[in-house]
Image (cartoon, one colour):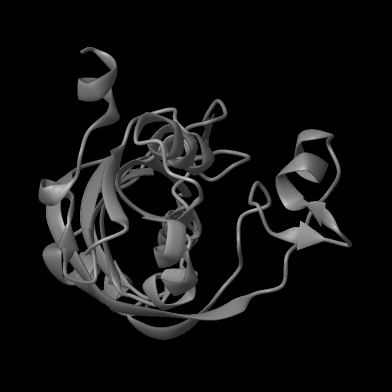
Length: 214
């Protein structure tokens, strides 16, 4: 689509950095992204430029596909790998039936509490800024939609790789945390890759690393 860049966001880049890279490298006047990816996540980021930025709200509504590595038996402050994991328990191996039953409780329209380390605002300030200062941040739960959760691999006792299809506003970090709470052993998001937004695939995306090495 004219005016839309598909970017495979590198690890440790913020979505803002990826958008700024498109703006600078391709010499466009205006750019914005649809659907933020955390710095520790990789994968598909839609960057609209110039007149296409008017369609950002439409692009943000598109369903998304993720591959998420859930690490059981630990918790972190950020619900992902940004902070040192705290050991909770050694998980017992789960049967296929038990795993399916747990995942099924998160499919559909659910209440989800965003992570404290998020870009949402609390009294005009970013939640992550308050959390980094050591303040207690408790964000209210929101209604979100998860269309499907499929197991890709399970390596007991700790590693659980999932494919997730979901709607706007879902925090996969929160999903990992809540799965851990459901099991009783705790969990955090060890790695995340977004592979699809609507009909757009990461296989169609440009990789900034390749351009920067030229």
